[in-house]
Length: 139
Ligand code: ZN
Image 1 (cartoon, rainbow, N blue to C red):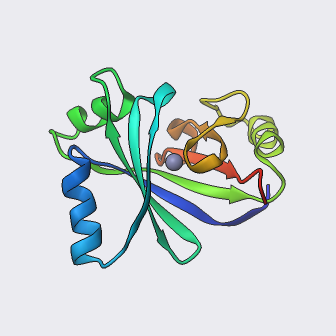
Image 2: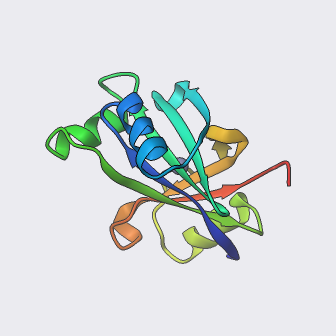
Image 3: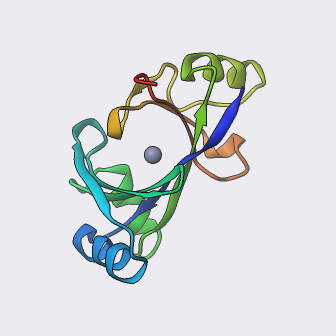
């Protein structure tokens, strides 16, 4: 696959408002968007850092994977996933990863936050970092 850049870094947070405050007031970044992603049971907040974004993720429900992640992490948030922008498209990159024996969480691209097509690879097969592949269909 052809990766152009780190599209975003996903960070799980127990309290989105507090986290936004830190990113804005301490790091001087600007939250340009918040978005509820219903099928992932999260509210996201986005910041731009060069070509890369920071995606904060707050659970909207106790059975959200983000809620489970925070619970496992002793109630604290932390880095949740890394997302790469793939130039040859998510479907092709997914097929290639599977051909190479990588277990995938998504068998087909789905709609993610911020207008992206996304798919996750299983952390079992990605050196323990949950890995997301992204493509911007409007580019
Ligand atoms: Zn993400």
